[in-house]
Image 1: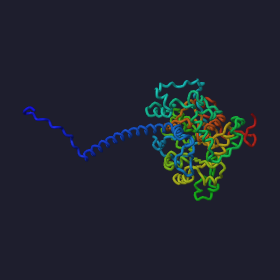
Image 2 (image 1 turned 60 degrees about the vertical axis):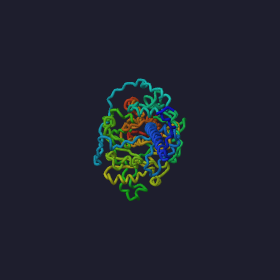
Image 3 (image 1 turned 180 degrees about the vertical axis):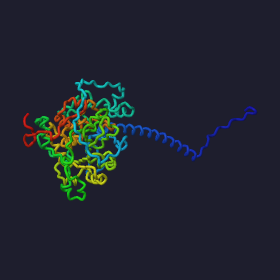
Image 4 (image 1 turned 90 degrees about the horizontal axis):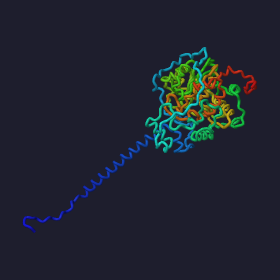
Length: 508
């Protein structure tokens, strides 16, 4: 030991109290949990955004992939339910017509105009050349590995798809090798569909919610194929376009019977010279058919608006055909929307296949009569009719009788119901974009941004077979279908059917 140098004392460990250790340990655990929570929340938000995009753009394939086709198709509309149930196979994003630009209240006192001249199109025809599929830029390495629903969602999220353009790599129905050629083939079959849509249609074909009893020559490949004139006469003889009147039972004994019309629709309206049946197809967008359509008396469907789309679909609405689901759903604002307050309203609701009016009244799909009474109290002067359900099933029977395979046992679409209804009121009927033109697209409706081939080819409704029937009855040239999506049909009063009781004309 040297003088002046103190020896070092051995160091002792720092003593930390137990309470301090608990606080430090708790703080560390809280921070770790917070970091994990933030990470989980970020992943959750990303997953929800991707799932939303997938469901919005691919509701049918995603539902099929996760739950199976039967899980979705088992959910059928229930009686007096106001829940929105899609019958076309895919759930569109709802667009409130009241929020569209230019919606103004209609005038129920305005008389229905009758035109004095037929419409003629001056556009010259050029034979359609073989269309080459649009070349797309390379979609990247991951697009070839990911399932199609994910690629569709990524296109939606990052702007890869343009409005009105086919989505993804193209469905089997809309691609270059798809079933939709230049002009619709009247022998189109469900076997030609892609796997996804084929499964959906086949599941609906296996259902029989309405107790349909299949009879007649249809549903087999050996059935006789009638010509267009014979089909038209058969339709005139076998399909009765009838509406509910105040003198029919059980309505005549009800307190609100006076709200029902006293005469049939075909007695009160028409005859019109030329009529336009305006579908809601997405291919009407950018069609420029507005002026041509306005040269007719027009029928429109459900919530299809005209304001903001006059250049493509016109502005005139003589008759609007609505189904009971639209009437009952609060989202469609049937009682308050000005969309329904102009022209004549015609409503329909499916009944069991063999039901009479009393059975139908006690077992409607949706509360059509309740909504009818409420609307009539708000608009007592506006003409409002209800189609008898036998009209729907008589028309369904004609479709089945003339097809080579079984069709869906569900009522026809509003499009075909409206077409046949107008054939009973008009001398000439032009149907727009019921058969797709050269503008064919997966876009479901011209006023929405939702894509699905089921809107063109059908799922719940036998839409594919309806198009086959209309194509066979078409009296216009194929060029009209290709350029304008226009089908020409004669009115029933213009047909000269002098054959047997089935309405088959004499001669070939």
